[in-house]
Length: 368
Ligand SMILES: *Cc1c(COP(=O)(O)O)cnc(C)c1O
Image (spheres, rainbow, N blue to C red):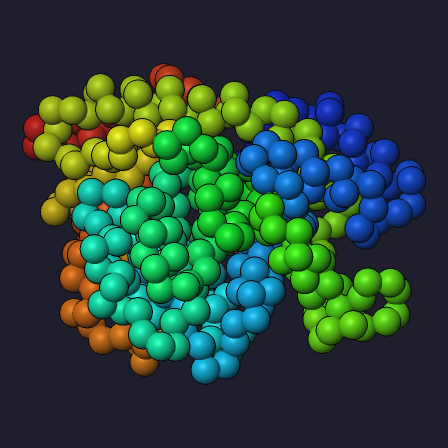
C-alpha cells in the first residue's frame, strides 16, 4: 500500500538523533516550558524570518491565541476561506467572533483577493488567508486591502512551513502567523504542537500571557488566559527535524517534478505554481471531473489518494448557519473535483512512478 502521507519513515530517518533528544529531556526532569521550547521558539522564528515565537499545544490553538491576542471576540467578524481544515474556522469561533467566508481562486485554491471587498463591513477585524497545500495565498493584494480597511492579517501557515512569497518565507508577512506541527505537516511532531510567530514584541508578549493563565510570573494572572503549551518532548523532536526541513521540502519538490512530467498528458489539472512563489507541496492536488472514479481505481491498486477537503466548512452540519450552499461557487466546485496524491519526503521515485503509471492507465481507459 502506498499511503497518501506517512510520518513513520521520517522518525526512522532521524531516529538516533530524536531518541537521544528525548532521553535528554526525560532525564533532565523539566517537562513544560523549559530550554527546549525556548530554543525551538528562537530557532523556528528565525528560520521563518521573524523575531518572536510562542510555542503552543496545536495549530488550532495557535490561531485561537493569535486572534485573541488582537483583542478580537464577540461581536467581531473575521474573514477566512471555507476551503480549509475546519480548524481555521473552529479557532475563530473559539474567540466568540463570527467567521465570514471569502471564495477562492480556482487555480491556486487560495483566497481570491478580488472577492474580499464584498465581505468587509464595520464589524470586520481581521483576515486569515490560508496557504493551502504548501503554496502562499496572494498576499500583496490581501495585505493592501487589509491596510486600506485597517484590518489585521493572520497567516494560517499550517500547511506551508518554508513556502515563499516573493522571496520571503510565509509567516513573516502578516501581523501574526500560525503553524501546526501535527505529525503529517511539513514540520511534524510526534504528537500535537503549534506556534504563533510575529515580529511585534507587544503582540508576542500578549500571546505568552494568554498561553498560560495570563501569568507574567507564576500564580499571578494579569489577564484572563488559558493553557495551551508546547511540551519539552515535542520541542526537542521539532528541533531535530527543523534542521532537515529545507531538505525534506526539496524532496517533496522532486516528487512533484516526477508527477508534473509523468501526468502532463493525462488530462488531469495539475497544481499551478504562482509566479514568484516557492511551493512546498504539503499536498500534491490534482483535479478531474472523474475524481471519485479515479480515487476508487487507485484504491484498488493499493494507492491511497485522499480529498482535502471533501466538504467545504460552510456546508458542514456544524457550520451551515454561517453561509448558504451556492454562496461560494469556486470552493464548492473544487471540493467535487480535487484529489491529493501520495506525497511525503520519504516517498521513493519508484513509488511515485507507480502512482503515475496507474493514473496513466486510468486516463487511457485501460482496465486490467
Ligand atoms: C492542520 C491545520 C490546522 C490545525 O492544526 P492542528 O495542529 O491540527 O490543530 C489549521 N489550519 C490548517 C490549514 C491546517 O491544515
